[in-house]
Image (tube, rainbow, N blue to C red):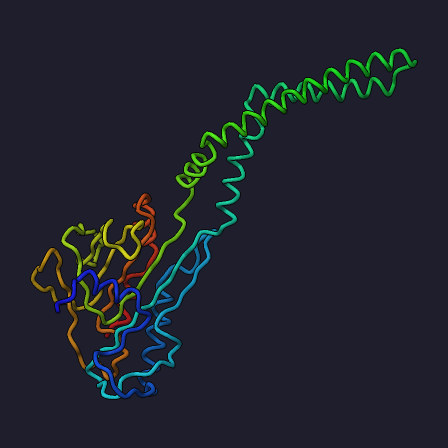
Amino acid sequence: MKRCPVLTMLLLLQAPIALADGDGPTRKMTGPEAAAFNTLKAGVRDALPKALENYTIEFGGSGSGEFELPEALKADHMVRMTFTATYTLNREVQDQQLQASFADRVKGTPEQQAKLAALDAKDAELTKARDKAPDRGEKERIRAELKTVRAEAEQVRDQIMAEYQSWVMSGGADAAIRNVDKTLPAKEFTVQALVNQDLSITDKAAPYQVPGFPLAFEQSEECPRFDHRCITVLLGPFDKEKRNSGYTRYNLRNTNLGAPTKPRGIALLVSGPKDKPQSVRDFLGQIDLKKLRGLMP
């Protein structure tokens, strides 16, 4: 049965490593194979952004260099590998903006805040005057006035709290969370370097202009995550196959480079929030594509 191209691509994206086709006995990598693999992995990591402010980074992929290869694998074959880097916005940044949004609401309206400030100032003034009052009668008069001021302030605070609770119950809190999400930077970027892998690009993908890299595509559908948009840049000698069922296939040829762990071609897939397309483009701009291309002989 013929496999759907998009399913094939998704399977490739999900697998940390896909070895050469076929089952059978395996062997450890030779010294040259391990050296080529480690050079590739370090090179991919080095080409990616080292750090983004307020983001944590996780980088991994095709094992630690200790995975085994099929015994029959030859130097002119290719090992299919995937390296993945995930950049996640720190939770503290999200919490701080959310807390600030709710704190403003809990303070009440500007008018209520101004009224409370005036009442608190009056409270401080009366308290000072009471402490300095020369006789008991004057103290009692100030105490009565102070009681009235404090009762009025408490009434304003009760009003603010009642309005806040009503706002929460009517869905205001949920709307505030959504608004904060809109103002936050992208919560996550994912970069996948698909090494020595054929892949299919949907014909719905739009050509994307990357100087010096003519095979680049942008799409908001059929990305690794449904809520992400993605940009794919092909690095290396990919052969374009005729369109079939709405997809164009890009294939790599086996080439004898002396080790199957050397890269013949890399498909770089960058994805981020669908509602922040420019942030995904800007993130791609921070990746050293020339350095990635330089990993290939």
